[in-house]
Structure formats: C-alpha cells, structure tokens
Amino acid sequence: MSVKAVRSIIALAALFVILAAPAARAQTADSDLKVTLAPYAWLTGFNGTIGVRGAQATVNASFADLSKYLNIGAMLHADMLYKDTFGLLGEINYAQLGDQASGKRVSLDGQMGLFLSDIAAFYRIGTMPLGKDGSCPTSLDILAGARIWSLGLNLNTQNALGGSHTVSKQKSWVDPVVGARAQFRITDKWGIDLRGGVGGFGISSAFTWDAMAMLGYTFWDHGTFLVGYRAVGVNHTEGSGKDYFKFDATLNGPVVALAFTF
Image (cartoon, rainbow, N blue to C red; front, side, top):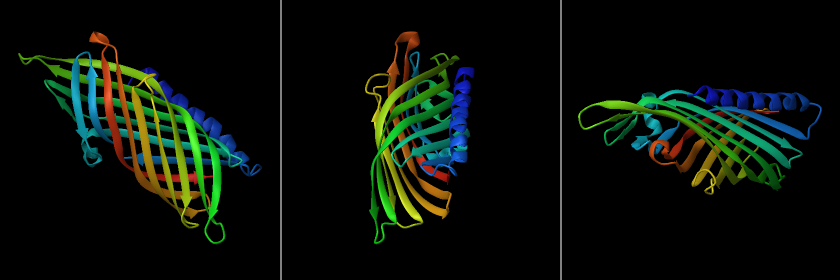
C-alpha cells in the first residue's frame, strides 16, 4: 500500500477521534447528542475480477478461507446523532490480502492492500414507539455521502515461454452513495439494524452497492454486542492500454462488533 493511502487512513482515523471524543465528553452536559464508537471484525470474502494493463485475475475466496489470504485487517465505525434528527457516520476498513487469485497466465502475488471507507450524513425521518408501553422504538434514516476506495496490488503475469513479470498498481477513487437505515428494538435488550444503499452512478464507478443486517444484544447501558452479515459490491473500470484498471468485485462476510454509546 502506498504512503499516500496510509496517510489517508491515519487522517480519517484521526478525524473520527477528534470529532467523537469531545462529543462523548460533552454527552454528560448535553443529552441531545449521542455518540457510538464500534470496533468490529468483518470476515471479508472476496469475489470478482481485477485487471491492470491487460493482465486480469479472477478472485474467488470466501470468508471460510480467511486464514489463507487475510494477512491483516482493521475496522472501525463511528456514529453521531444530534437531537434524534441529524447525524454523521463513518467507517474505516483496511485489509491486507494474500494470494488467492488466478487467471489465464496470471496470478495475484500475495500483496493486495484494500482500504474502504464510508462517510455519510443522515436524517432521521422519524421514530415510532412500539410495544405495550412504547419501550421498543423503530427508527428510519436516509443517508447521503461518499465511499472512498484505495487499492494497491501486484499481478504476476507469465508468458508462453515461462517468463514472468510483475505489474504493480495503486489506485484510489471516490463514489457518491445514497441509502437508508432502519433500527428496530425487539425488546429492551435485543434489536435489529438494517442498512443498505447504492452509488457510483457512472461518476467514478459504474455502480456500487452495500447491504448489512445486524442483530444486537445490549448488555450494558452503554454497550451492545452485535453479530450479522455485510456485503459491498463495486464495478469500476477506467483507462486503456498501460492505464487500464478494472476492479469488479463483491466483498461479503459475517460481522462481529462491540458498540459503545455515550
């Protein structure tokens, strides 16, 4: 992964800390503000096609192959809601993947660094109290923001004579995204979160989408354990010849998170 991409990760992580930490401290004085921080593990399966300068490889690795191709991963979610109406959410995902790609005289040479971040503002359309005493509210949010991609990879190509050479590429781009989120309280302890959206619209990628479903158990006033499933897809192609780049893939797998709300 390039120095530029690493700096982007550090800058975004610092931004979340700068924004969320003072907000969390202010929560005791201003009950209108709610802050959620959630480190999580996304056991990311990877399926799709990667192409660079005429070399193309097909990846087909489920999350069950995690120990074979995931070298390192780091994930964080931050969420701020003001007066139960307006909010901001951000997610950072980074994975260093190993060699699980194959193609016609092409292989992925054990180094693919993928950085994915979602940043979005949201508006809470409304909250409906459910249950006999209204203790199980259901809320619906609409979201709009950006999805940031940064991909660094090596493709090792082989010719008919048995020779080989490595093609390296670092690529970053940003896709606009829109979506919705629904949160259901089943009981005072259990809840379900659903989120999904679409984007790209031909501005940067032809199309990108995401979907996530989470089941949560609140074990403490400020703590919730969540488990679920997330999928993100993208179809991004640009350039030709030496500038050709293609990333048409789906990332999907189970999610385990621990959310702290202040």
